[in-house]
Amino acid sequence: MRKREPILFNEKRLQKLMDARGVDCVILRGNENSKYVSEFFNNGGTLAYRPFTVFYFRDPAIPAAFIVPAVDLHLAMDSTWIADVRAYAMAEFFTDVDAHFYDDFFAAAKAVLSDRKVKGMVVGTEGEGLQAGYKAKLDALLEGNRIVDVSADLELCRMVKTPEEIRRLKTATDITIKAHETFRDTIRIGATDWDLHRASVKRMIDEGADSVRFINIGCGPKTAYAAHAPFPTGAVIRRGDFVKVDMGASVLGYNADFVRSYFAGETTQRHKDIWKWLNDVQIELGMSLRPGQTGGEIFDRGYAMIAKHLEKFPREFMGHGVGLGSHEQPRLNHVNRTVLETPAVICIEYSYYHDGCRHHTEDTFLVTDSGVEHWTAACPRELVVSV
Image (tube, rainbow, N blue to C red; front, side, top):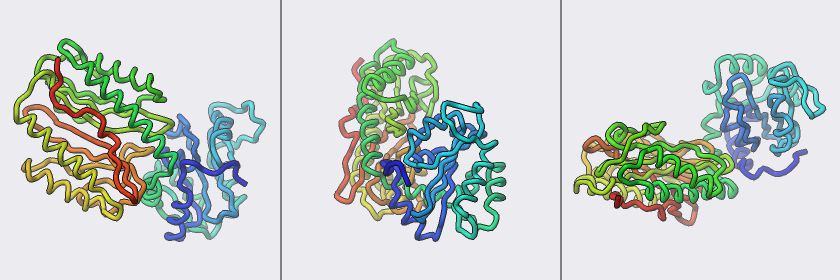
């Protein structure tokens, strides 16, 4: 028995993918995949010694199981749709939950596999993406089964979004649009990149974000070239300075991701031309997205479009899906043969270097069977800001 139906996890799609591969069971320890299937958004999964692991079976008669550190057992039980949640001693030896704690993760995993008679099955794991020590011990526990790598299958599963995933992503994007407006309004002579950072963070939280996923600011000569400058430097804005921000708010574990670039007060015609070409092509490519196209086909079309304006265009990819992860399928590069299926949320991005500045623009689109919604259309994209 399960406690409720999943609202984020696309169970029907994973079942279909498991059917196609003949996979009987998937064991998912990766931070994003275990959160996705369990719907428990823990804060400890990135700690290598604290695995949170889902055991999910194709046969609906075999119940899923979820193994977590003891310190997170109660919250996991309250959060996940999975009825069988087990804990191993980690951080605490007992809690307010009256439950047996296994000595370690692998003792708990052995019990789950034994209870469900996992023998002679095809078992999917995240393959070489797992840490070596964990993988070796898990493989030993799975002796007598055939182990296959389902990393790509989980990426395909997560590409197609459920209605609740779309709601969270749209809310995060709307909040980030407002934060971009505040960022733009804060650009003025004498302001610093710290001023821009603080104003953007405050707007995100005031608008209802749970947290700030990231804010990467390029400001002035020291970081104008940078794709992902991780920290403000205290740069003071002067007239004519280039200012760029790549940011995303987070809402219930789902994150926005898009970029705008600006000049303070003035710039050259060449900069204006580059910015116009990048944005025009980006929007045209985004609105042309259709199910059935591969990542490589989308990239090739987008590259041909911008090459009419800018020779030797430097990009090796032009976008990606977005969801629990920052860069999900389909990744839009020349060699990617992943087929776009819907509904999917896609970021299209273009960048170009000129005169010490990295022009960068990125927009977000919802692609459905009936068409494309341009989620970030309302975010201002004028290059020059009055200061």
